[in-house]
Image (tube, rainbow, N blue to C red):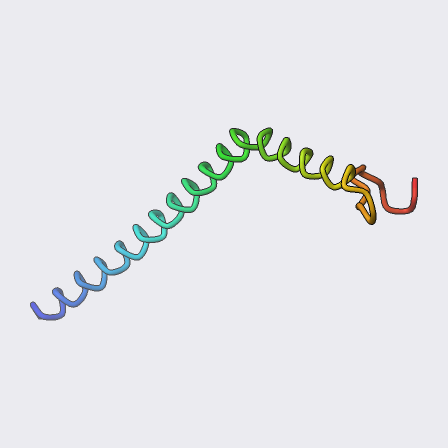
Length: 76
């Protein structure tokens, strides 16, 4: 009988640990997402400026330069 109670208690502990692991993974994913959002807002303008500089350099390079203006699909 004592062994049966021990088995029940061990099974209960395992379920609690699995639930805690899911919460920990959720917090980890949330933290990573928050870091990505902060980096995008912090570095977004700098990255945009670098792309604009590169686009301007391609435009002035002559030849078969790609258009750097934004167009909508359908030719408007």
